Length: 161
Image (tube, rainbow, N blue to C red; front, side, top):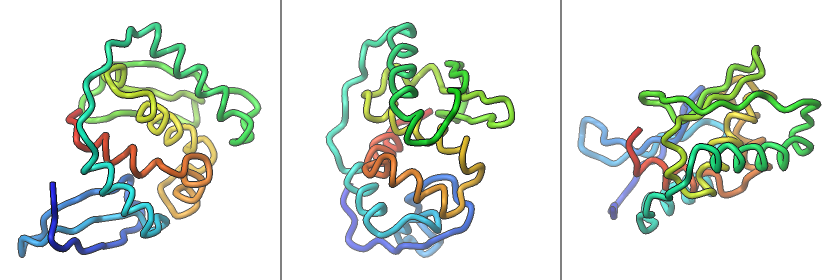
């Protein structure tokens, strides 16, 4: 998908990056307030990346991958204990963090995603254990832990939940 001109608009409390058409028909990239221009560029590169073929990963393999990734991010996030991570069928969501219950829910459909995108989903939800909202400190933490998260999010946005 190629665009002649894209307008950037920063918004507070935005939960992810969006590419939209405004009422005038212009392409507008809505980005959270704490995401820099490099994050916006990475997102667009991800949107233009070649499509990926769905993976044939079992739920057990997906759980094992998530457990391995969670352990890798435990120390950098300063987590004393890991949250419970569950896979559930969810309409319209790839993941949710219930920080008060120390529970992360990920959509069962994530098993068809490449491991890098699953990692970005998990890191996003793990970051909510430290920063509960989508204010600038959240996006700084995301970028510190996974500098290419915006690229992976761009790839993910090409898919439907």
